[in-house]
Image (cartoon, rainbow, N blue to C red; front, side, top):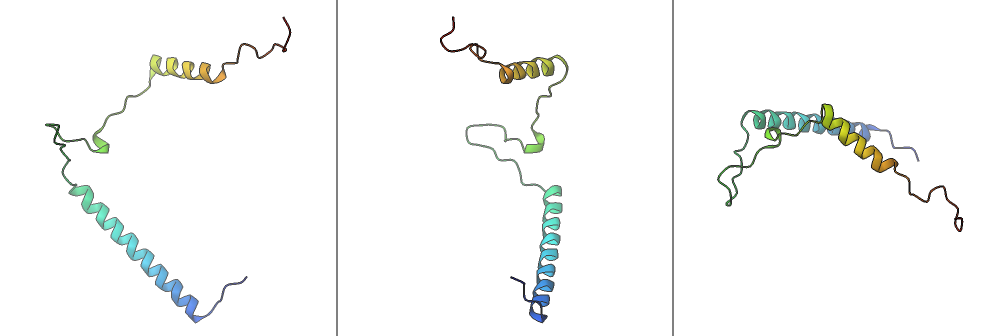
Length: 92
């Protein structure tokens, strides 16, 4: 079913476009201020130190020997065949 094309629909397109661009500009402004003035880290009652932000956390890298061992182990698990794969039922 074709959409109505007229003055009203063109006006809504303009309103929608202005609203989208305004929201985008507001989001960028909020991101800018949050980047330069972030909230302080949360410190739980059970800890002396505050929790780390996501960009402060470290992740171990898989390089060299560790990567080869872990990839080989994962591959052997995924490609392992059951021991009865080639045998017929009832055959000895």
